[in-house]
Amino acid sequence: MARSRLIGIATTAAAVVLLAVLFHPPALPWSQTLRIGLEAASFGELNTQAAVELGGIRVGQVDGLELRGGRPYVLVSVDRAYADLLHADASAAIRPHGLLGPRYVQLDGGARGRLADGATIPISRVRVSTELDEVLDALQPDVRQSLQTLIVELGAASDGRGQDVNDALRSLGDATDDLATVTATLHRRDGDLAGSVVAAERLNRDLQNAPIAAQIRDTNQVLSGLVQVNGSIGHGIDHTASTLQALDVVLDGNSDNLARTIDKAPATVTRLRAVLVEASGLVDGVNPAVPSLMTAIVETESAFSGSDANGHFVRIMSLVGTCTVGVNAGCSVPASQPPPANGISSTQASAPASAPVPAPQPPRSHTSDQDLLRLFLGN
Image 1 (cartoon, rainbow, N blue to C red):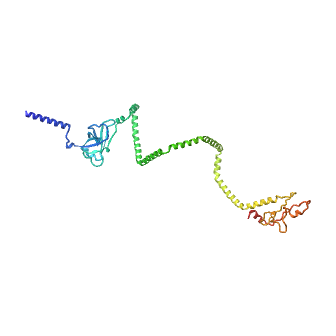
Image 2 (image 1 turned 90 degrees about the vertical axis):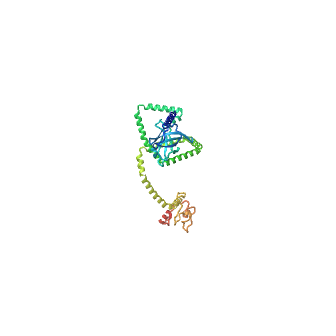
């Protein structure tokens, strides 16, 4: 009896141990795993035993999910065979398989140090991908309906045109190379882009602080003034048009003459300059003799301005030395003979009134030709 009871207890204990081994297998030395934790932002649904991949190869699985400090905490285990590929600066990403597949954990091994067992990858190195359903859930119902209509219409448009779609995707792939080149160029000019952004912000701030109301008022005044002189501006434009039309008529057919005139203009200007130089020299030479010439003209007019009743000139003028004033001033009468009264000589004054007055004989001048020339030239 006791023996049967002992056999039953042993059988029960063996069954419990077998169940424990089946459901919680012990960590054997040749099958130990590296356990690490991931601090992540909100990522939606992540199943236990989800895949953990490194370089596209499954190296472990998700063991569980916890909440630490108000943030999700993911417990993962990695096969010890890949532990040497994980370094202290390793990073991770929680992303879906394909477009709508289940989420998994993708590890990036890093390059420095060694990742210890039980280490935690901080949230700064854990990236969470946004799924399409989350994007759709964030949209408004009318936007989702419009997007659904767009997808349906795109499907109808691409039905039977797979080759065209493939060609479009191939062209898009070629365009990505150009886009990469542009992106690299912009990356090299990031300093200039930053300066442009700063200048744009400064311009925006200046525009915000600018007295736009005053500028609009001044612009309104300018436009009002232009409206007032609108008629004058139109008249000026019409006059300009008529002038240009008349000029076109004048120049029509005279292009050769105008070209010839322009071609000969430099030589003509040169000749005019030479003539002006010679004329300037002539004027400079004649200018000193102008006062003497004016005096000679006045004396000549005075000499022939007086006459008697018979039309005979009775004014006598003698040039002696440099005196050109005339007899009336008494500068050419000899000292033994008194100056005539009223411009009549003593011989003429003693003649009887009935006798005809003989024509006066011009006195003989004592001035030589050289003296007369010097008088006229003012030297």
